[in-house]
Amino acid sequence: MSKAAKAEPVEEDQAAKWVKRELLEPWVGNPRDNEKAVDPVALSIERFGFGAPIVAWKPETPMVIAGHTRLKAATKLGLAEVPVRWMSHLTEAEAKALALADNRLGELADWNFEGLQGEIQALAEQDVDLSGLGWAGNELEVLKGNLEQFLPKQKPKPPKSLESEHYIEIRCTNERLNEIQDQLLAWDGEEDIEVQIA
Image (cartoon, rainbow, N blue to C red; front, side):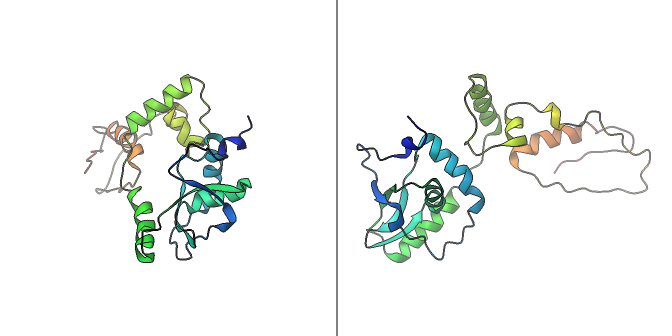
């Protein structure tokens, strides 16, 4: 079976109906910039099929509520039909409110980095292809546990003297926080260095 065949309609699917892709209309006021996500989502659809349907308002006004990136990815893949769940019971205002909620609510959850790393490492050990999951390059190598290549070869030497106190603010993702804290704390107690983490 070809990769593209996985994206074809499934008769048992009751949550969505397969609709001609060109009938759907993106929400003109969509405030999300999703261009950089299109290629990874296309890879995911090509590999796994549609994990979630495109959510649209109603057949007579087929405005996309959720799934603009999936729609662009389907266009990139040249798919004739896409799975759509209609939300015809909503008013236009509610449909737009749901579009905002769908995007925002997904941002509220955090990753448990240790749990995520454990799952990625387990998949890697089973020789599962990790492409198309949304992580790539250095990020994926860190999750697989290959940290050595990203850490300094030797600990930087602290300056011999400091004329005044200096404060450094570091902004990072939750996933990198523990790694950066460990590196900073390794300096604690060195000559003229005191590490305080707020």
